[in-house]
Length: 161
Image (cartoon, rainbow, N blue to C red; front, side):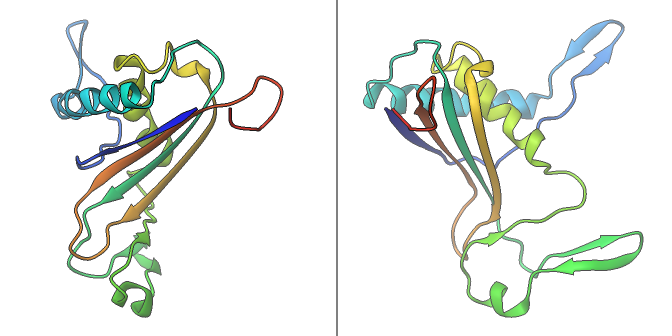
């Protein structure tokens, strides 16, 4: 059993909670992203007749970021270390996003997993036994989004149930 949900919101990488005099504050942009994603996840799960049972789950998260006007380059220590090849960028198709700071896949996975728990799809994100996260620049003329595929898997095999 599985379902797919496309969330038409700019992906957010999890930001650390801020504290002030012992109080913890969540970044309001993180909260707004989850507020937009949770209802969409609930609808997708309901349409797929998803049953929340606490068993092992496989999650695939594809983060698609708005395509910049120019071809992206990565600079580290003042020198250019990598750039998207001109012929690849010119196709206008989706291109893998490589960064040297920020947009780390572990931070990108945090908010979508929290949204799955808040939507009632998962009891806890500890149910996730396999997690695949990828990040892309959007194709020309396409917007940013987060695509999520959630699948149940067997207890003793890699086979998706």
